[in-house]
Length: 248
Image 1 (cartoon, rainbow, N blue to C red):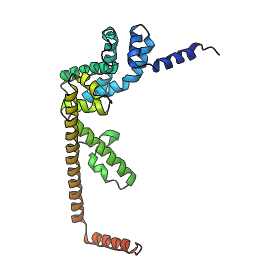
Image 2 (cartoon, one colour; image 1 turned 45 degrees about the vertical axis):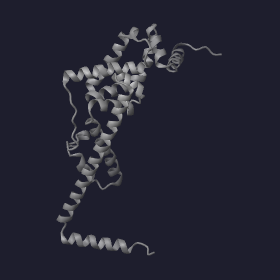
Image 3 (cartoon, one colour; image 1 turned 45 degrees about the horizontal axis):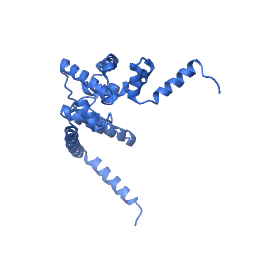
Image 4 (cartoon, rainbow, N blue to C red; image 1 turned 30 degrees about the horizontal axis):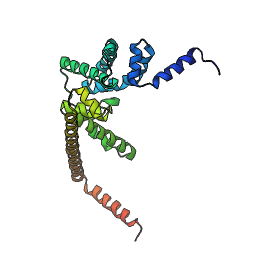
């Protein structure tokens, strides 16, 4: 059997660590194995960063708070007794830091769908960009519009309902884990989730109805401003299209 040296040996060691559960990794880190915490950082840096950013809506502060989460986990390694999952404990630290930040900054997220969309250098309202006649572009914009409507609806949920919804749907935590993270009973967490889903459904229904009303009004205005010659041309095109259909 060939011997493993240097970098290859280190690579095998890291792969072995990656196969271990979180709690065992953290225990080995507490015993002095630094590489074990590196694996935990690899697993949870992105999820914790996403969780914090969704809470505070500030990517720069999110990076700083994410770093602080792991620094606190290191500092409190001896306090972790394994009574809950490591991920639950880590989310609790992140949640407390995010709430502390919100209290300091008094941040409240209120995004408007009517605001100009400056991503990609565009200053036009998002709804105006749906007028593209390219079917592929239109489909992509409609998907983006739906996503933006959903994000706006989530942002308007009460804080406790939004938190539970995101922990469940985005971070994939079980209701029992969420209950420990937010310090509430599991039944309370399920109730918040149920009300969040109901509110989102109603918000999206109203948004869809408003969009349909806007499109009908726009189409009506376009009909009114068309000249008689344009209307006559469209009638001819429609007639020709009908005559070109195969007869039954």
